[in-house]
Amino acid sequence: MKIAVVGTGYVGLVTGTCFSETGNNVTCIDIDESKVEKLKNGIIPIYEPGLDVLFERNVKQDRLHFTTNLKEGIEGAEIIFLALPTPPGEDGSADLQYVLKVADDLGPLLKQYTIIIDKSTVPVGTAEKVHNAIAKNAKVDFDVVSNPEFLREGVAVEDFMKPDRVVVGTESEKAKKTMERLYAPLVRQGNPIIFMDERSAELTKYAANSFLATKITFMNEIANLCELLGADVDAVRRGVGTDSRIGKRFLFAGIGYGGSCFPKDVQALAKSAKDVNYDFRILNGVMDINQKQKTKLIPSIKDYFNGDLKGKKIAIWGLAFKPYTDDIREAPALYNIEELIKEGAEVSVFDPEAMENVKGIMGDKITYAEDQYSVLEDADALMIVTEWPVFRTPDFNRMDSLLNNKVIFDGRNLYELSSMEELGYEYFSIGRKSVK
Ligand code: NAD
Image 1 (cartoon, rainbow, N blue to C red):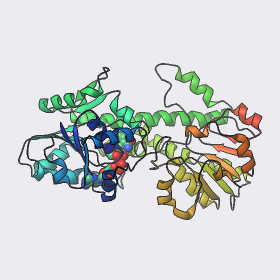
Image 2: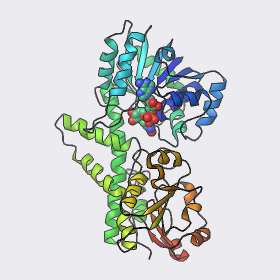
Image 3: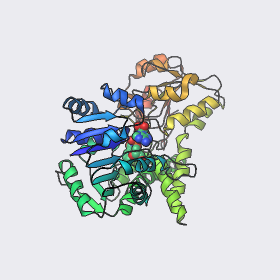
Image 4: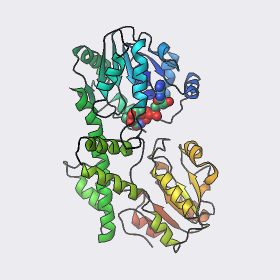
């Protein structure tokens, strides 16, 4: 099949590359000229494990192309994916300007029956809006399908190639058949393609992300309570997670969720509810709690330094909103850095992949280290924000010789309390006893 993907970010690039891997001829389109230039030169602008192998293979075999020109990019395409940004607008609702702009542009360009697939996360009713925007100027028949994406950054290729399920919102039999053909190679193990109406498909994505954000937040609340009641959140997690109705995943307490999806999607769903006079109270709580949770360790750091962080050097391990990505959108690290700077601290940072992105935002307000040890040189404390595996079993002896104080503030509960005690560290984590 000939496929076009409009928007070549985290979702668009993975979608385009993976569908070229299953034998389709794909053109990815983006208005960002520097991004397209890089891709044409074989450079992948994001960090996503495993994407490089597929990318190189399919570019080499002439199945994966890049352009900034929409007209040229969609030429002859049976399917056009929209993988465009839907950032939060001022009132918290998803901003549809990018999606609707492309829909407007597409109308006069369509030359034969085409399926336009909405892969962006969009509020209920968007498929209809996209349909109307295209219909204004289209001279051919077309269908708009809602096909939300559930991939996780960091394991995006694996998620895309072997999805737990594919959700397709369409009432067109013709589109349904094409979607079955397109996704067949990805669901060979028997995972379902779940067909439904467009509105339900749109809501499914928000329901999934909001549920997961709520699960994390619930556990963070339990962690906060553990600290006050003298319980250990790790023990509680194991105790509840073994109940198959609850499940083991997404129960790790920490300093909040971030990323380009959960924060904006929870906010957008709450706003959608408000628009129809429904007060989705759980979600309001989730947003409020998560915002506070992100900087939960700051008071402990301040207490440690007797309330004064002026001139204190704080080293940070981890900037990305989670491991195996360079994405820093809504990353808890950024909120902590801002707080520390506000308190007069000097901040030095290290992350295996996200340094360049943070440099783009923070500039010379902080210092950037070459590796996880040099960042500790002359630092008064270490703060851990992202649970990259490389931080899990560090060389503590080497750390001892670099840090001014043997103290760690761990927002991701990487270490056993007993090991920290043995190593002689002061150790503050989430939902567990402090080691002093
Ligand atoms: P992104 O910001 O990484 O990529 C979007 C791309 O669209 C950018 O490269 C931008 O230059 C391009 N673009 C903007 N306007 C354009 C136009 N008129 N024509 C062509 N290209 C244009 O965003 P993303 O993370 O890939 O997310 C895209 C959508 O997918 C969002 O709705 C998001 O909520 C959803 N989603 C994201 C993830 C994720 O993990 N990132 C997962 C599932 C769903």
